[in-house]
Length: 170
Length: 106
Image 1: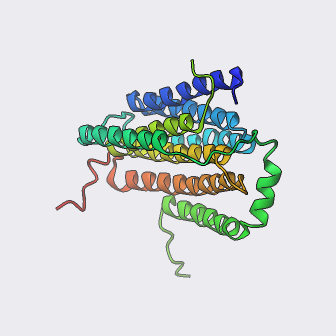
Image 2 (image 1 turned 90 degrees about the horizontal axis):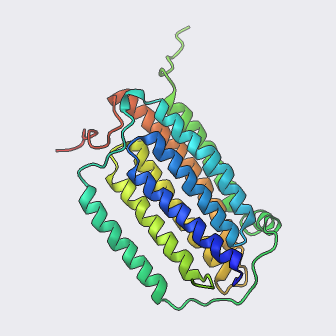
Image 3 (image 1 turned 45 degrees about the horizontal axis):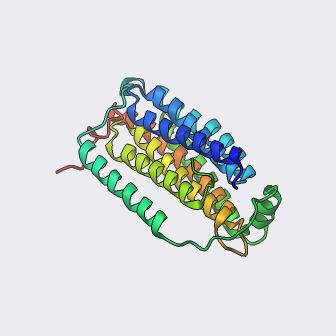
């Protein structure tokens, strides 16, 4: 963990994630905000790699960078008169105060707590163990997740269907 | 320069990202911007899970990874449904500005 490469990678990737997250806040055009969000997700995928979570890093790239950002872009282009602006509303100041307080509290707790730290090397390849856990101890949540995805897909299709289907009279 | 990276570093990055996500979801007027904030909060929490999985004392340390897989699944389902709602909202109210969606306001 004291490897110089890991340390540099951590700082660069953290700066990338947090900086692009601030870019999402600052971007006036919502398309630019999506691009910043994608960069932030990629930085977070790199952070997973520094934590030796290889499977999750790939999943992060596939699902967030690949799929969710495309969903966002589709939602933006499907609402053309909704505007491309990305301004803050009237809650700007209270939200800022609340977020600073939340960040301060979380950081204080993170620094002040004594966690039970294991002295262990990083994981090797993790996908085998994750796959076995998913099909062994966590098989019930795994199946429920698949049902949830099916419901979400059908629900989305039903919601955005152009016309409510008429009952066939004949 | 700090020569070791501990769990606190990851937790601080995660806390900062969570707060930025919270700010986005509270303050943005565009519905899609609000959803971006929610996704960012999901990501910050996932980073915490992975960091604890890597550092914390546990018999089954990879459980954090399994949990993250479930969180990502639920987040994907949530994103699909919420963006469908955004499109539906645009179709009926002709806006995605959450300040102007005040039908239930008295």
